[in-house]
Length: 467
Image 1 (tube, one colour):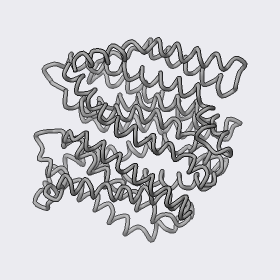
Image 2 (image 1 turned 180 degrees about the vertical axis):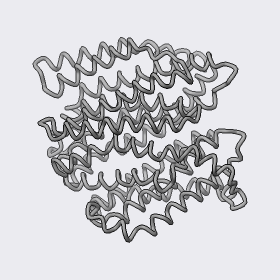
Image 3 (image 1 turned 90 degrees about the vertical axis):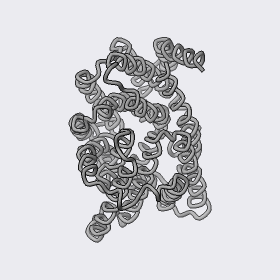
Image 4 (image 1 turned 45 degrees about the horizontal axis):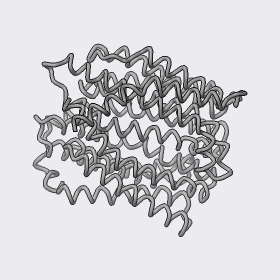
């Protein structure tokens, strides 16, 4: 029971900070849609997503390795952190050397300096944040995330509303927030004592890179699956539609928020709670947690799909309201994205980063092919959303089969299939506004709730009795 208690405790701590942060950012959505045109919002999204693609390339995926190797008590965590810090600085040096060449790429319209700055600062913040998370400093991890979000909010208001800097101000808000947050962690945790030349361990560097380098294409492939549709929408349809599509994705972000909180706590538990002498117990642990996790996802998704129009009317400016039509499929895609991430925790436990790479490659390939086929059709941006959903379903099926070689746990397939069919019906009725779509949404929410509330409620009651 202690492992469930620790998982719930960590989830609650991370949840308080993360939920508060994301809700505050969500409240800024009307500011974004009022201060930025649809084209500007689309370009700002291209800048940030390009930086997200660049991050693993210039860091060699080292942030994930720092988290995983800091968890291993056999390693000197000072050596782990020093390795990560040096590699990120090396990556920055390479990008600065290549800057004159990269700046000639017309697609980025002179914003390459902003992309490199964003990527470096985000990597540095991620490095320090993953380090304190691996050390079990979850309260501080959540607090610094809340501080970072507060800084973004203040700067967004200043840059967009007061100074009217536009999309550059939108991006710089995140950059400055990452810098301040990194300095805060560095000072309060006294990382200056942990980052020293004498902690450079070539043998450890080799092991960490052997783990992290396969994660580079993995991250790139996930970026392709998640973001390539926005580039293709821009190319096929235009910046305006991409702006709508980007705004529509803010609602599924609420689901990503819920799953992300849990996944952060779960990854810590999945590694730290494993025991070679109790593999069966560990499998039961995985199965029970997966049952509750999928229940939470589908209940949340059913509600979000049913209220897509209401969320759009409350959070979007009038020009963006039509973006609601992209939400249902994106919400369904987010469910399977989260399930895929959960299955990836098996690879994290066993350090099978190569398998993570292979499965993510399949997902990216499926996504690109379907985008090319569906976006030019009358489906338009919804074709991109459908491509994303189907690619995640394919990867989940592969991982569900493949991970059984390492940890055999109950995926509750019957419940999973029924959940998927129900939200599928909700999506179809919502997008096409088929006659009777409102009763269908109500019925779908009720069915999903009754199907999944049992494990969640019983788990919460066990935890409350334990506390």
